[in-house]
Length: 286
Image (cartoon, rainbow, N blue to C red; front, side, top):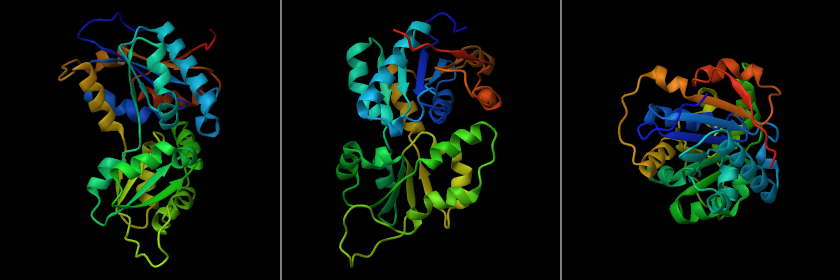
């Protein structure tokens, strides 16, 4: 069970539609090892990227409500790009806790690139969203941006966490447009396209495939995800600066909640690496 709340042991919730948010959880655990962590996955309705905005809002609000019934939390990280862009406003209006969302790391990628050409690898829903267009317009207007949407990589990340081998050929097929230099927004036909040297992982599932992504790439690129930035933001919001807790204390405060227990037993070995000894069922009933 989650321990009682104390001032020195903040309680942080992390939510995603599946296991992708574990990449954000890892960054949070590294930055704030003394915190108690509660992870919730709405695997009953995975994936969110194929659902309407209204559905995403409804499901996110329902899961957060269930999380707060299960445990008193100081802050909840919405570790899903789709849910962050759709539901954060509604969550902040309904619940008296702090929320931090996740957005593609376009700004740091634009600052890092040497060739002036960056890739954005995300779900098709994120790629097509107005929020993504605004991010590029506001933070990468001078860069060439290759937009690539992939649902299959989300599925492959879920399979990997369940101990199923991920074929490099499948990963290579999904990321090949990044390296074929297909600029998604309109460019003059005679415009010279630079070589992509920096790629934004715009879905929290994708860092779970980082080794496969590196191995499948035809040349080395810098892969940038949102994990460290989110952890820094959470630390700033909670004014957390330093912890000295032992790892055993952290593990004792971890609880994994699923909206259904179907297909979760195969996740157990991977979840143990994040300190989760068991999986509990989380009801979305009102």
